[in-house]
Length: 461
Image (cartoon, rainbow, N blue to C red; front, side, top):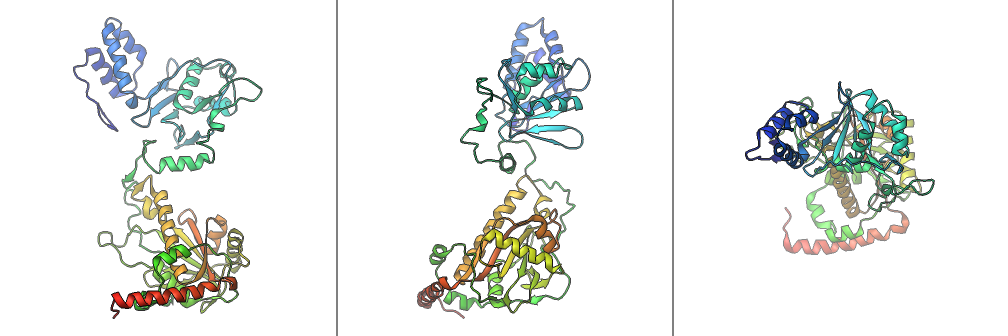
């Protein structure tokens, strides 16, 4: 038996077992028919039961009435899936798990939960109607009365409980049923969406395709490595590495000194500082020879400038290849609203002098990866923000990462479609306030130490 998680070998199965498994391989088979065929061979029936238990993770179980399409099917998701429906007490309330999620693919509905190792498929409209009474606590006795039109309704409820989509109250005492998942310390703090995202973007609790399987059939494989902008670019300052080798403080000092600073001094940041920051933390150094024109790097950087010496106010797109900025033709009211939103999110005294918005062209990853695309994108965004933090700390710039700003406000200000290019982070840049001016002195001291050490070990040409 060849399954998703490997092969299972059955040595010398009886004719009854062989016939039953061959029929199951062709499609759904009624156990009632199999039982009838095995009545004359009790040993064969016992063997079949043992085999079915061994093959539990490979077997889909369905419920249906006497004829017609099944009402529901329970699909195992992992090799650890075990399905054991059991009778339910008539007076103990049940309900849908708060982690169960109902969705449709345009043909049928499914219920999945990150806490369950099975998926429930709802094949018909009647199947979906059987779920409705379970959105709030109800006893099995009342549920059977509400859904009396279906003879298999009791079995449906048992299937839903065994599959992990419906939970049973710990007791029926009191007017309000108590469900374990509501107070489980392992679940507190997890939203259903966050837990499902975590479970589906890694392995072990689902059977979805995962990894480099090219789900888009190459439809998006020719996207350029950076979004092109029309119009002349504004060249940015390029620092000399020889100077940076000498004046930069040690990495340990930078890491110890790194901390968010949303407040800025009245003196604005300069275009030279912005250019150095972007050059050191965000420029594209090279493209892989194996993927010309379609590198997986998905990020785009936009600068919303309020107060920067050498740059006019407005929105700019950063070209990581040319190390230049291209003005974005956008409504000034929109980008000012973006700065106000960033100001509120960061909690500074004034709107940021410069706001760096990080967007991601999601298809750069999703055209070839199924499952981990968004997870990898967020991990890479975190690495980029850390680089921005470390470089800005070495440069004595006041910076602060912002987790979220209004989705539509960002799309309007940057002239992007958030469905194609979602924003995954913001980063404010400014000068240290007067109270933090000591950081400048500290950098000069650290630079002197760095210069002395570098002069011993390196000869800079």
